[in-house]
Length: 313
Image (cartoon, rainbow, N blue to C red; front, side, top):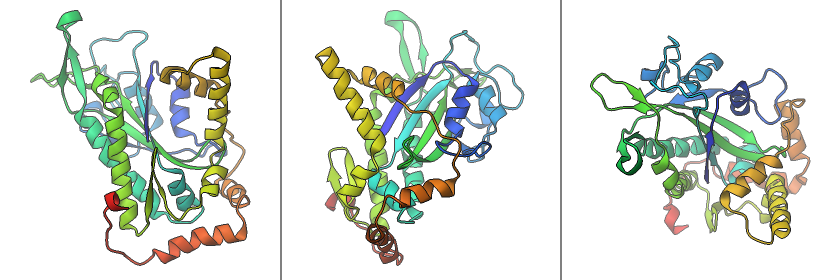
């Protein structure tokens, strides 16, 4: 699924949130790769790794190379950008990291790329104020994608943070830039979720996996339900917090209230572990038969199989 969040002010902590994995030892960081048709205009190279300095400059409304101001207006509380997070189904995460099928990671990345192309097509700028306010399509943005593999509970959780900078083209002949208007993107968040889900379902079916439709999308049919529950500790913590707060208030929480509650109950990242230690901890939660089952799914699908239509699975 896709979640969208506004990042109001740039700070060093924002860059660390995107770059630092949930368990890595100090100095080990996730690399972000640039995307978007506007990359060259803001000093980035599409598909290349973004540096800390370049990220900080563009997020604070400056050219990544020259440090020149990008858009004319520079409010003190200017939004740095938007975090679009794409979350793979739990079974895909489990099979990718514990079943050892790294092809699923590539499938997730292709699905994210497809969804981001749709997201970029919704990019707009605003003209006018009040009753004269209009959204003008630009179809151009710049951002960086950071792929992570774990939840803060250190369960397998394949997800990508696509940070979209608050800048787009203004449509002028001079090629000036303006702030990004994201109302159409937020309004179409469910559609963008389905773009990602459908693309990922197509990719995993082409790898030979069967899928089962669920209320929240789909799961790999042959990954047992008990493993999905076992490796969903963070989601279970969130659900318990929501139930408790709703009981306290005597009503259901709004989506915004849930988002705030989740941030309040988010555990701190753990920096003392290496990737090998994290994977070992995860494997220790599996019986030998469960681990063998997951790895057999990978070996059974090593040979290329004819693509299967996700809508028929």
